[in-house]
Image (cartoon, rainbow, N blue to C red; front, side, top):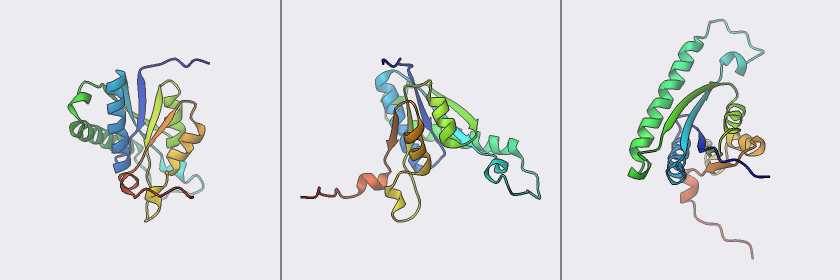
Length: 163
């Protein structure tokens, strides 16, 4: 079955170092392919995160969307400024979505050539592992998923293969 090339690369951006590396990778790939990059930030309502908890205070979801958009704009601007001159001509479309990050990214990537996410984690070992969003995307997306390794993983010494 042939898959149509769309000329679009979707990349998950949350402001973390891992997502910045993923965005930089996507920009470089888009420059080679002549593609457009859709930089996507996904926010979740605290009401969705804690369905069984009653909030005693109202949550300003409009402010959450505004902060997500600001974080996306800042991350894209900083990452574009840090990438090589070859990526300067790449068109970047910022997109803010609501929902579960893995589900929203996979749904958006269904009409793209690929989805790019960063690997991430916390703690001494988890930086060497794929985060939950990356894992879910790799398992459920219908398009190719590129998981850009963390700087820590790239700097880890190679483990020799067992004899």
